[in-house]
Image 1 (cartoon, rainbow, N blue to C red):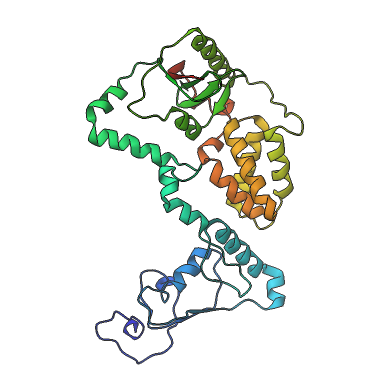
Image 2: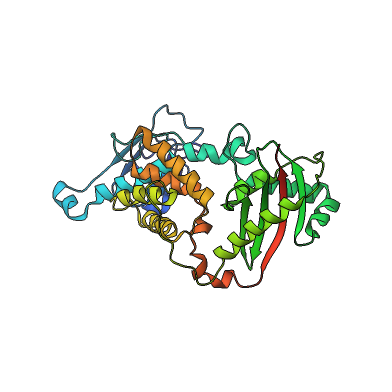
Length: 355
């Protein structure tokens, strides 16, 4: 039977023009001597629709166009089960996050660019070049290069004593100190300057620490210890077991602004269960002060940018998922004491001497 539809068949046949199949042929089978797929049932998972179409939409197909036809329930039946709305909602959510280059379900379905996919494979995302957007992959690659090409330096880095400190001159207005702390499995970064200590996420801290081998070490001074005390105080407050209730500030506070936006879209019916759960976790962390300030600021900035053109709840959610790592949503520090048991430790500090 398959030899009638597989363009790669050694001995092709033309005995049949129509192939009726269950889901068993949705993966791993070539049927690209045909160019029409008719879905008699509509799966809830959009990936399964794409797998079906992928049987005929292959690189070496001879057809210029591929056609997909979908059977929907009658209006009376659909009023009861809402299959069409559920399928459209899930596919639209999928397209919003990953993009699509063809319509899967209906003629009115939007076609959007592969925004997330392009970003995942782009050089900018991996290396951090040509823009502000960076990825931890860049720094992971740096570590791997040192491990593979300079094992002596890699061993030296592993053996750095705790409380290691250094200084370098930097083109900033005032002196700043970046400190890396650890308590159990919990790791945090704080930077202090003229104002109070501010928490940074990993990427922001890595960007500050980034330099080149030719950079010369500068001398520490008394201000170093003053700034270190600020960072220690902030870290101690954040890792105190009995955290006081965090009350949100007035209208211009980052967490407050982001919460107002999320509360306005949280009942959006097109969210999947997973998306609703993610949104609830983000809101909880914002209410309890569990997100790093830098992460919250970046997320708010990106959300506001996305809202300038049009307020789309699914687009806002995609922006949040891009900017808020899942590991930050595992639970508040006070609720995950198993991960924060152990002494508070200063791992390293870098003093940036301003002009």
